[in-house]
Image (cartoon, rainbow, N blue to C red; front, side):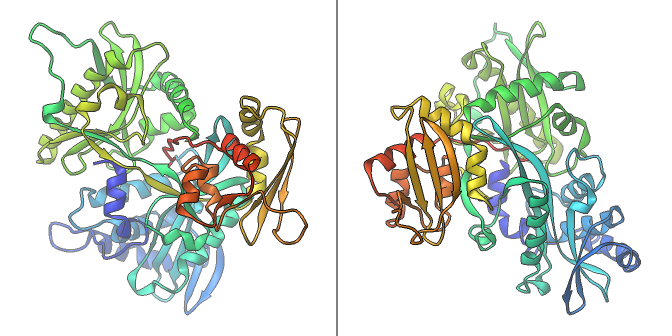
Length: 490
C-alpha cells in the first residue's frame, strides 16, 4: 500500500516509537541483539563525540558519528518497526545504514541527534535532519525535513524530543532553510510550531477486474523497463516538467535521481523502483516509480510522468498492466496475494482523469506538517510569484498595503505599482493601522501553501476573516488554492 496509508496506520510506531520490536525467527529481538553488540562500544565513543547538551539525570544530547551506525540501526528498528506490519525489520535497518553511509547526497552521519544514557551507554532517543531544496511555484529555497523521531517508552514525557527539535531548528536556520516539514502523528508536531498545511500523498486504487486487457491480436504499444544510469538526465527532465502542475515540490537534481537509482539498499523502506516508459521502438516517453513490495495487497506507483507531447490516454493502459504484472511477481516472491494497483500521486493528476472508472477507490490526502520560522522572509523569497499573480489578475498594478494579523503577531505587506516593495513583521494593536485580514494561530500557512482557500478557512475558523472586499480579492489573487506534490528526500 502507499506510504501514506502505512504512515497513518503505523504513525505511533514510526514517529515517536511505541510498542515496536523486531522479531527474529529464534524469538529474540533483532534490535536488542544489535543494541547489545553496540552498547559497550558506545561508552568509549561518548567522550570523543561532541556533546550538544547535558540534559541531566545521566542523559546527554550529542551528534551522531559514523561509529553509531549499528547502534542507531538497532534503535530505529526497535522503535519504528511495528509487529505484523508490511514493513520488515531489515527495511528500517537498511534505511538507517543508507543515511549513515556518507553516500547520501545531502545527509551526513552528524545530522542525527542522539540522546544517550551514559551509564548504560544506550541510545534512548534520536532524530535527524535531512536537508533538501524545494520550490514554490518555481522559486527554489532550502528546506529541512526532520525524520526518524523516536524515544524509548521509559524515557518519554521528559522533553527529549523537544530538546532535539531545538537543536534541529538551529541547524536548519544555520543552513538558511526557509521551512521545515515532517509527516506523521496527528496533532503531535503542533507543539513544536508545526501546522498540517500541505497536502501529502493520497491517491486512487483499482482492482484486478479494473486492469485493461489486451485483445488476442493486440500487442503492447508501450513497455516499462528498469531505469539505468544513462536514463537519469531524462528522468530528471520529465519529473521537473510534471512538477510544474503543482504549487510546492521537492527539487530533484540528477545527483538525487542517481542516488534513488543506485544509492539505496534494496531492503530500505525508502527505496523506490525507477522505471522508464518507452515505445516498442525504444523511444523514451515517461517515468514510473513504485514501491519494491506490496503494502497490504496493493502495489502503488509513487511517480508517473510523461514528456510533453505524449498522450496519457495512449500510455496509461500499458502502465496499469505493468503494475498488475509487477504486483503479481512481488506477491509470489513474498508469498502474498496481489489484489490491487494504485497511483499515490496526490489529489490531482492526469491519470485520474484518463481512467476514473478503473480507479474506483479514492484515498484522500493526508498532510505534511510545515514550520515557517520567519513568515516575512518567506514572503520576500516568493515575491516573484506574488508579483506574477498580481500581474495576471484584475488587480494588476496594485498599490496598497495588506496587514495580516495572526492575533499575537502579524505581517505587513506593501505593494507599489504591482511590485512587492516591503514585507516586515507587524504586531496588531501597536499602530493605528487596522488589520486587513486575521488568521488565528498558524492557519495562514494553509492559505500560503494552497491547501485551503480563504472562504474555506472562514468556514472552519470563525475568527479568520478579511476586513474588506479589496483585502479578500488580494488574498485570493496572491494565494490561490493549488495542489502540491512533495516527494521529500529521505
